[in-house]
Length: 451
Image 1 (cartoon, rainbow, N blue to C red):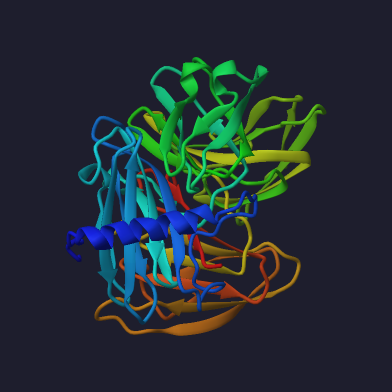
Image 2: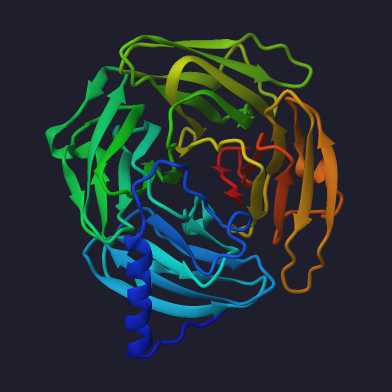
């Protein structure tokens, strides 16, 4: 791992000016921000990544940021860490080809919660925030958004739910936070007209206004500027990141949902409209017939579809779940045990993903799914680390099917300590990952999109 060098004061000031200039140019947009820039910005002179959600030792979300250079060329990074106390620290370092490094925000700036703005002199660097003991992960993203939805938060006894907010721009951002629960809609006055300053970070405790409530849906509407948001849920001793979604959907895919004994799995949804919405979950388990699971969501309310335990769904490893609704909704997957649960927001189909072993544990499950009605050509290309060789091959993935990556890509015997680029000829591909846990499948993590 590279050691940081303290930059001369002139270099630091210049780097800060570069960061300020880049983020000043960030415009309000609700195009889904990418978590890497390998494909669409290969010739970019510079790229940016933003990460928020980690805490100091006084919080539950202690962890680190890992950055990996997927290219054949060295990359220079300026990492500007900011805390909720308004304190900042700038680190500058170089990542050699195909190497990674980690930083610990709490060692760089004093505070309770942290965000980081990363400026890279080119494309191809990916970033991930990893909670302590690698119990949760979330990709760093390349831009702020103006609309954000997330479902499934709990503020019941033993749980906390926070929104970690970072403003990547050079002007203050103003936003409203609305919530949806089984009892309906709420727009608490303290959550309206909230402001976060330029390049500042803040935490919103949902439980301060929505007390002792399960399955809370959240809508953040940015009135001015754009922001980066990460939902942080603590349930018992379990911490998870809920990255949410930028648009409401009528279809969502959950290719790897655990159904094993002693596990809990639910699809949590909320309906932000004035009309009832019917949600149908089609659950597919090999050699097992499962009746569609249905949920009617009242206007402005949340609800859930239990996957396990569920008398209609036998314990049988992993299930593929496809969700369809009669109106736009926001969804998430809750998994865990009686000791605590995690939240995960589903990925959207795309044509390129990166599978990287940021936890160092490898994966219990790693699958590719074709969400379309036509065959996809899927190509796997390893990104070799030190002492590794590049391998690549392509397969045809049948319509509406999921396959284990290692069962159809013979180039690697394991994904532990490896990084893999997965591409398809149409943007209808999903990649799903779960970390090794007992029981299986209770920690789901997102790949990085490569677009």
